[in-house]
Image (cartoon, rainbow, N blue to C red; front, side, top):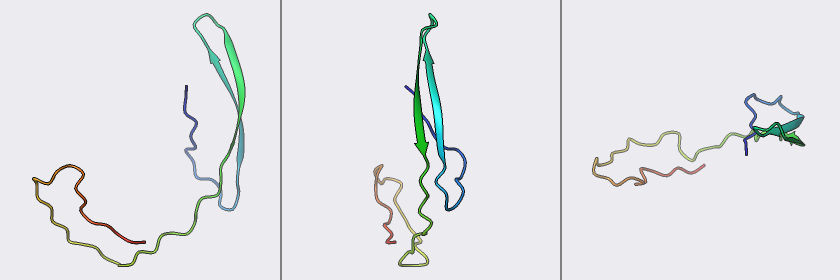
Length: 75
């Protein structure tokens, strides 16, 4: 198993495509390959618009259980 990830920003307005050849080999030298085509879709260039410009201050007890909601925002 493995992970394929993009570590660089794509160019704005383009959808670059990469063709990768993945080869797996075992300890005895037996191997198999496959081709993977990765298309990077254009990101959403519309930033969220929040209903308020500021939130807080917030106070929470040190005894509050893990997972306690501190606040919720609307965008």
